[in-house]
Length: 532
Image (cartoon, rainbow, N blue to C red):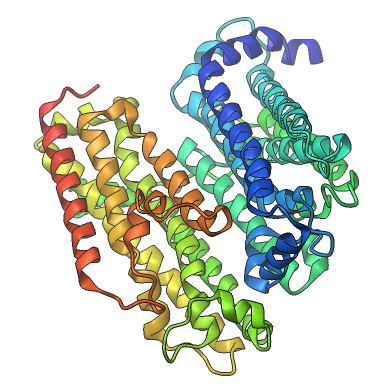
């Protein structure tokens, strides 16, 4: 029986590898490059133990713990510094890789009718799902080995073989776990969009649970697989137990996904969409209404996530103020504005992270147009009395409003939680202004995406690389001591760091004009080019 349900799994695995060989290679090269450039950079920047101890003291505050997790700050060697500052963030990216790849070959292929075509051939009922999981398992193992061997090959004294292999295993284990999570959501959701949204929401949920646990209740960190990554104590205690937990949990998730896949009908889901009204409202009959309806669930999920993310960062500000008080080093390091508290001086670092995360759903909203085009659904719309400008305009409008809502809710969550824990709460104007000042930079990102869709549609995905670049140079710029011009290659690098700096209008106006120009170029290109 098992032979029948898993027939041709090997051939299908080779088929998926052939389809994804470039995509998987790019993920592996990107993650490995990002991992291997960090330790030599740390070695050059922090050559003495005294300098590393200073950095350890800088990192020992609740906000940084919420962002990057726990680490061995008592023995802050190059290895411990790398694991503390980079491992968790890289593991999150590895989890995102698995979510995208598994969604593509489960619900994505099912939605496009490919799995129905394959099942008409002599393949088993569970073969394609397991072929996908086999490829992801192989990718995870390759990720673990390449990164582990690469880190050891750097020849840094405090990065021994066991610690390096554990570092790689943590990345591979996280990738494996979220492959299992996505495989289950592919059975629960009824579309690729739903699978992706639920899986990313799970990734954010586990990140937030770990952040809250690491800051306030250590036991809560064990409820999150991302908390297990930090608990491995790479290059310190080298605890393999959490990685074993990741592998066992992944196997259980794989088994559950197989069971759910075996008992459901093709193209159905255990969380089916509700039937709509018999006759659509006038609003739904417009391109804007249809776009909003298609993205409603995702917008609500991201809005809730951003509110919680803002609240989680706001909730640590009470402890942050007490940490800063009497800490001469931090008081000297922070750029303080006249009349500002130490916590207010720390706001820009938190705001850049929140604003970059808030940019993701707004870009997903506008990039949805390219996804609909690749699935050949635009022909049906453009065949009616709908102009191309109306069509792309609907996606742009939803994306622009989406970004404003995400930043506003994140600011509201941040201010609400901060007000509850601080003796001298931040004013709402300071919290809202600090976060909303990044809105013009977000518009530039949306404009760039529109320009790609209109002029170079096959390169639309490059905007994600630009977001990733912005995160690296702005979030890690202080650690790597990048030159200022490197940060200014990102639109987020031109935003005044309110409230430390004055909220000047000129750079924000220039960013807004740049966004408008990019959107105009994109709309003009979309009107001229062939629909693919």
